[in-house]
Image (tube, rainbow, N blue to C red; front, top):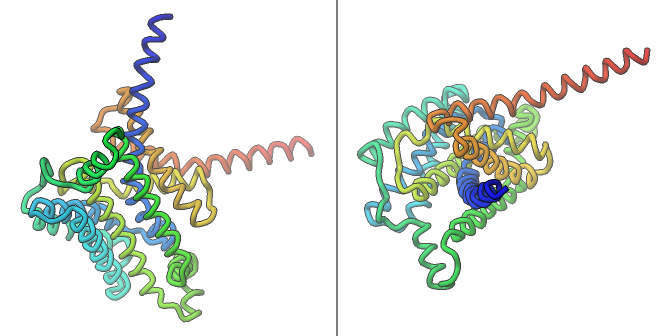
Length: 320
């Protein structure tokens, strides 16, 4: 019995730390997932630029910070760089008439070389460099000296992620936001109403990749380095967050949908962290685990529907 209490007393703090870390990562990667949500759920556009625009934000922000620029300015410029990448994908699709899938692949491939050019090397460390988090931590230490340092990141991530979510919700309720949603739902109908669907696509891709690049800049400062390969599999992780949130929260209002994306991002990071913590898989299996999560999330509703139909069919047969 004493061994059981000892095990529980050791497990609770470990799970608490795991929860906090997963919440931090879930929120900062949740901004990326919101960008994926715009293209895949709102625009119905299979955009693979994500794997290039995510490290683009990290590369731009880290390079500017190392050169002595303010981390806040560097993060904002990273957002603009991602928006430019999204515009490139949008113009390739709408003006060059290249398919959405191939447009994203072309931009993503180009960005690999561009990111190397920006950093001048495969990775850029941010050790002993000022970041958004270090500036905020210093502010909290001066304003509230007795406040626990480990909670400063959580507070910042919650406030920032919710702010991005609220701004996105507000934008999607504007006239342009409705044009984006209609373009994804029924482009022929909305085009007949005089809406420029090509412009709507480009704006949606600009906003989406701007948010993804912003997330990349925040992640680079969070983990202390930027790497040219850090975007590999980002699109799958973003899709996992969107699908998990959609499965749990359902297809409701924009407010509910975007909230579901953030919660899905946290749940995804927490489940992966649990698997790795209990050594049910190795760190090298992370991409495989992500793919499995996406497959399960995509196929589960179909299995559920098939099971429901077969159950109803069995009951009607029995009654007859």
